[in-house]
Length: 240
Image 1: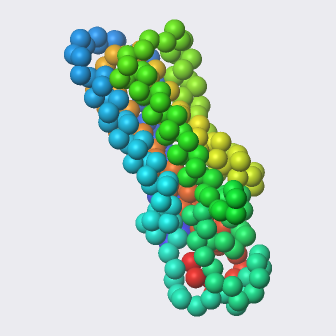
Image 2: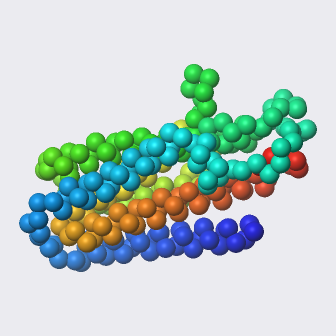
Image 3: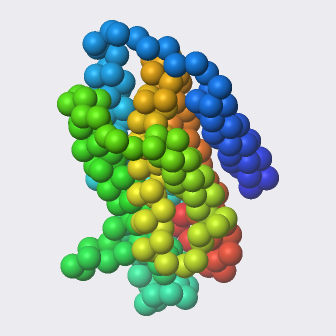
């Protein structure tokens, strides 16, 4: 099962990188198609905003995401051996992760509450992107920017988000939070740059579709990392 999951995650990651290469090619070599249709930009902004709002709601309710994408209980027995906490303590989901101590790099505490660093990062990135989307796509504010630079900056942010478990697994939740914030912001920057450089409605839609695929790839890679952590745990009767 582990080999199958690793293969699927590698497959998704490979297609994600292929998508980055393809969107770079389309942006670099496709001629600008100036479409004087007033509803296209608000439509693109609306679709992207809906995705961001769904992402925020998913991050606000991490327990539902845990059951859907991450951890499920395998039995109802309590721990009899817990190396990172007091004995005979029922294992709980805190901040989207089991409170066994092995996921300390994935969570942070604020006023005695535990939060998932990855989810909070995605939420912050989505909120910042919603503000940017309002200004660019709905208010049609023009920015005197080098959009090629914006494009490559967004590309680097997405790359860091996709490879965060290989490049930035440094054991710090602050890094986890920051990289996930950059991941969503990178999608927004890429969308703005592609819209400004190509002025092509179809390419904009393609990029939005690709961003959803990138998000699911990131979730799958997170699952693999969680399985890796659990596989290294010596507790045999873990509920998860």
